[in-house]
Length: 485
Image 1 (cartoon, rainbow, N blue to C red):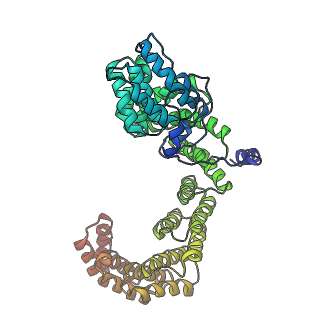
Image 2 (cartoon, one colour; image 1 turned 180 degrees about the vertical axis):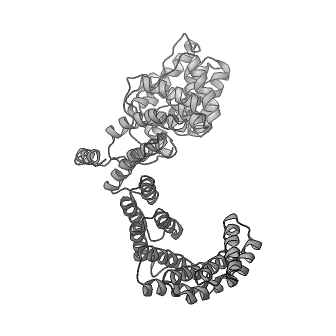
Image 3 (cartoon, rainbow, N blue to C red; image 1 turned 30 degrees about the vertical axis):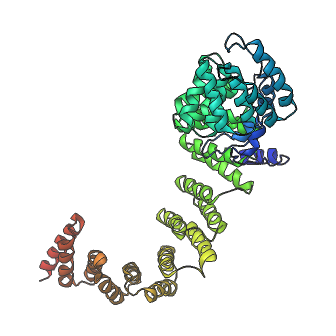
């Protein structure tokens, strides 16, 4: 793990940070071409959200190859598109210069003036495309639908309908439009990629995967399609495929934290926790760790019995944000204590005190004090230190049964049996601790040879909560008590 981390750190040294922003479809799209390109594949700028798998739509709308096809898109493919009359060709020739010069409002107004009600679907398509460029999607939608109603095999109109629907998150309609376009022989990288995006948005990952694979075949350098495919196979628990795809993305964008995090999740899915830990440590070296990521790192190390590394990760998570919930930090320290890693647990509690000592409420303070008391007892700390902690808890809440039980256990180990009995008696007065306290008290009395005094306590414990172990112990004490008479 250390060798891989050091090697990757050297790779990162001279790599500039890649900015990652989840881009929303906005008014900037007004200048974007309505037609999909047939140009050679290119890399779309990276604007993706790995947590949801959403491709960055602005990155696609603003792609230079995507835009370039617009002017050519006004041409006519006679085999699959509606015929135009000579008069309509003249109309288009009048409108084209205004479009080329960027005078889209003027082009729209002129086209509306010259169009007849029964005009060719090509003119409806042209009007819709002009409106699309002006980011007037509702108007464009109406005209593209007119075009396909007049000429159902109008492939480019189906494509633009798909674009409008996917931008509006109408994914079922987008799927229908892109599928129809592909049926008509118009499949290209963008169409397949956006079809995959729409299937993925509906959490239908099998067709999404197939669509993204076709998109990536046609545009192998397109980051969005590779990311979308990685998410689809991850969601289907094809973790090895996801890890391989993410290797390529990480090689291309080594400072992209979300890729490292998603790959860590794939390694966990592959039951390779230490490889996941390498990724999480790398993210921390990049200064981009999240609290959740650090806690996950700590949990991995706990499972792998690496207590010191676990404590270090938990401590970093606690120190990252003093406003985080106290409960998660406490759970981390308790997990280590439960594993017998008292020194590691102590390191976490020390970080908790450094972070929250002046801010803890009484309830949280009691919980931390009780854990510290248990750690002290496990480490064999001085009686004064353990007692002081437990007495502080009882000052906060005199009816804290756990603290009373811990004091009883402490005095039992210290052979101060009278004090142990005193605290067990107090704990027995609390309903939820009655049974355990009476059994503990009985054990102390048996050690003192007071078998007759122990019997009523054990019988009461069995009456409240019968347990086989206590029943056997009760029989032994009864036998010994009778033999002593």
